Amino acid sequence: VPLAFLIELNTRRREDLLNELLEWLLAHRLGDGSWFRVHFITAISTLALLEAGKAGLTRESAQPSLDWLAATRNPDGGYREAINLNVWDTALSVLALLRSGIAAERLQDAGEWLIANQNPDGGWPFSGLPTGELPSDADDTALAMLALLRLGYSREHPSIEKALHWLQSHQGKDGSWSTYVPGAGDVGCVSVTAHALESCLQAGGMDSQVTRAIRWLEKAQRSDGSWRDLWLAQYTYGTACAVTALVKAGRRATTAVERGMRWLERAQQADGGWGENMHGQPSTSTNEQTAWSSYALLMVDANSAAGLRGIQYLSDTQSDNGSWEPACVGIYWEVIGGYADPVYALVFPLLALSCGQLDPSEERFL
Image (cartoon, rainbow, N blue to C red; front, side):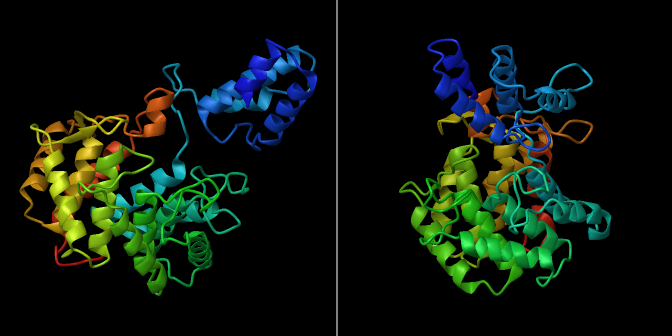
C-alpha cells in the first residue's frame, strides 16, 4: 500500500485512489506508531505519510512513526531489526533455558511477560503488543503456551485455557494449523502444525486434535522423505520439526520418522553441518540449521552418528564468549535483505547440545 501510494503520487495522481490508499494506511498504523511492528514496512509507510503531508493530502503527523523508527537504532548508529519477533524469541529462550537445566523459578518474569502480552482472543501475536492490534498466529500461540506449561502453569490457568481454545478453533479441517486463519488464503504449515501438536501433547486432553495433526503431518511428507516449510529454511526446518513432533507423539518407530531421519542424514554436508538457501538448494552450513537437524536426529536415536557429527560442528563453531554466529535462515528475511536473528543462533544450538541430558526413551520432552 505505501509503495502503491508513492507510485500513484508521482505518476497519475488520481485523487480518489490516493485518498483510498492513504485512508487504509492510516487505519492500519498501530498505537505505537509502527506498521505491523516491522522496521522495513514502517520505514516505507512513514515515507509515504511524509510525502502525503507535503502534497497537502493529510495533516496526520508522522512523528509517532519517526519516534518508533528512532527507537530501533543501535548505539553504533545502525538499525537492528527487520522484524520484531519478541514473543517467539522469548518463548524459544524459555524453552531452551529450561531444557538446559535452568530452574523455572529464575524465568518467571518471562512467563509473566508472555501472559501480559497475550491477545484478548487467547492467542499471541509475533510481537508483544497487549492491545490486540496485531493478529494472533498459531506458531506464537503454540510456543508461548508450551513455554508457560513448562514453567509450571497449570492447564486450568486462564491464560492456558484461552490459548487452548484458540488453538482448537484454529485447527484446519484437514488437521493442520496454518499461520493465521485456515482456509482464508492461508495453508497448513509443517512447523506450525508440529509446534501446535507439541503444545497439545503437553497440555493433555487434546486427543482428537493430536490424532488429526499426526495424520496431516505424515501425509504432508514428500516422496524423498523430507517435509517443506513455509517460514524458515524450507527442508531442513520442516523435516526437523516434523520428525521431532512425531517422536514426541510416540511415533518414533514409524516409516515416516525413519524416512525423515534418512533424508536428514543425506542432507548433511562434509563439514558435519547442514545448510540450504531460500530455494531449498544446499549452501554453506549454518549453526541454526545444524542445530535443528542434529536435535531431530538425536531425538530419534541418541547415538545417531550424523547427529553427533552435528554436535561436533556446533562445538567447533562456538565463540569463546559462548555465542554462535547467526545466519539468515528465514525465507521472508532473505527476501527483504538478509536479517539474521541472534537469538536463533543461541536457542537452537542450546537445544541440540542439551539433547543428551535426558533419557532417550522419554517420548515427550523438548
